[in-house]
Image 1 (cartoon, helix red, strand yellow):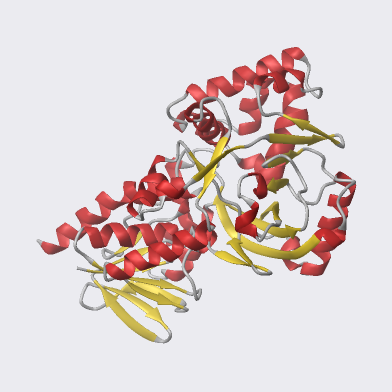
Image 2: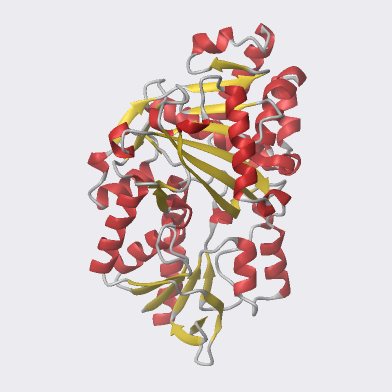
Length: 438
């Protein structure tokens, strides 16, 4: 059976891998000249590394299983990292229980209630029930108003911007559950890993495997539309021509999928367009000297123009970065935020000024390279009763299926969840293929 996959990110690549293993022929279409999507690498001067920050947790069993198939899992290098908080102009380490107890912004009762909140979330096996309550209401009830205002609200705004008002408590549960699992599997230590060479190496190897399996990679091919042909097969229009497949899977973000599939019913398109997404403006800095001792620094001060500092070099050895230091400065924004229209120069000036204020030892001449990535559709926001309104993978177009980030339910957007989504979607796709063959 012939399958077409729209989107060459990790989801599309993994689906292609699994479908070929099941005996099908697959073509992947992507408008970019390279595979990888959000996981793709880019150049920072002479250094090649991930365009956005990614780590591997010891609890990321789906991703590690895929890397094992690619003969890369054994190469993962693990490092114990630390977490920091920047609050009221002061850095605090919050990497273990003792540091948590010493954390000055919260009183002893507030810390106790915060600990109970984290433990209660971590012990849940399913976050579906939490879709019925807003995150802020749930956090206020469990952690109390002081902790909500001093800690949770700044963190929610940092991650979701104005969208924090619409997020259900399932969002917080998913984050706590993943990080708690990481600490549990890392023996209460914060253990993160990476493959030497980053996703550039992972994707290069993945492409080799897919080509060996017979997958056709149609890169630089912007899909114009997906619909049904007269013979009951699916048609992908690309470059003004139509290519026909027995089945097509669209992995693009929900609003984009709605535009690509104009023949979907009105209610189907409305459900796709109703999914609220979060975007990102992320700066990558290659520096001469180390900037921070923390892998992640959570920022609660509203004046800072970015929402965190990711010290990647606390995980990635300098020898993979030309002896330099790599830092990411993410700013999570809504899809229509005016910041998308700002020039790179303006964003760079604001970000570097903030670094100078936060880190007195930082000098602008330490910056070897500064690049900015803008992506509008990154993270679907788990709004109230999110699962109830989620579009199914099957559509009214019999040969067209939708599998995208919106289908990551009760989870957070990361590569492990993406691979897990593929494994969950595969049986449904194969059943549909089997029905065609009868």
